[in-house]
Image (cartoon, rainbow, N blue to C red; front, side):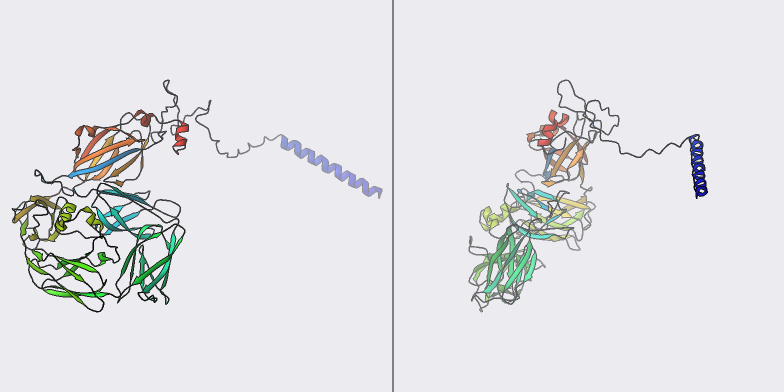
Length: 580
């Protein structure tokens, strides 16, 4: 036992000596340098004392002696300017139009303003389009900018129907009331939709199953109880609702949907539809069909029928047609317009009855004509050219024809009438023809564009003209550019620009750049500029009311106030919603 303990102690002592030896040996070899861990550089406040900044992309505060709040920025894309420069451009008159004393510019009646926005579920702007599908601006399309904003300042007044749609699949339909010289707003948001429910009944109070309910562009059918439900409808006013079913007269109504609420009191009553036989006995005038327009004869009465879906109706001259499903117990007027002819009398007035078809016979007689030929400069005829005869003021000529005031344009969603605008296509001999309306617009613009769109020509015609030629020539592209010079800047500034009321994307303009506005029509323009609510001086102001000419590439100068050059202090930036 004692021997075993002695051996164990000896072994432990030898092991200890071995460990000490190895340690002494390793201590004589230099240890490798440890790898330094990668640590993110701490944030350096450029405004803190003692923090020197050498990177050119960082802010470099320089405090002039006269004002400690002013800053110069080494990076021209940085800015301490709290508010954007706002620039508005308005076309006064397009280039290339002829001039005659006492004749207003073409489109002078388009004075209604329209603006708004489209936003998504989180309040973000949606990129899309606003299309006019009915009314005096039919065919016009407005595009939103990146923030979902749209606008126009050159629209014709009256009731219009617009559809709003975009890449996200959103789609709504609204009626808008545009007035000359006034602004009409329309803001559509998809973040807080409401709902709509109700019933469709007949005059006896019985449910009508299978009726179609179209609300704000959505469609639903009624069930066996005549009930319907639209669970998600973007909130707003004047949502177009049309209820229809074969055998009944359709019903029209404007509906309001509140955000996050259900409008469950929608009750629609459909009455039996009446039939109307329309006959145009004479086959005179141009080869194209006549245009029939229906209007409620009782001015000021409540709108209950979607007349815009019926007007205009094409009817061949020398024939008749039956129109079904019209509202009964209502006096309506039937107007007929046809190239080369006048209706005699001007309209037919009938009262429709249930189960008893009524007849409207409209006679035509030859009307004064304006005919002509579209030719190139070389004298060659232009086949398939688009030709239009337009009154300088479409609105004025229309209300003059009907003997009404401008409020007539708000009585119904009306189409464009021929006394304001006529359009046709030249035949194989380059010939065209229009009805003359000398009483409503003695002088008009005659505009021709070649079939491929590369050549145009315009002339003014008077009441004495019966046969005229239009010479077309290369249009030269028709796109110009305006460059705005903002001298004296040492930092960036945001710019909001709108052309004819259409907003462009907001742009942070670096200190060393001009602001460029592309895609402008050559002609006379008017420009206004403001910053933080105050008008800013521009070189265009010296041109007076007539504005200034833009052709190809034009430069104008804007003299910014000192605050838009030197910027604002941190407190002002915070109050303006900007991060200092």
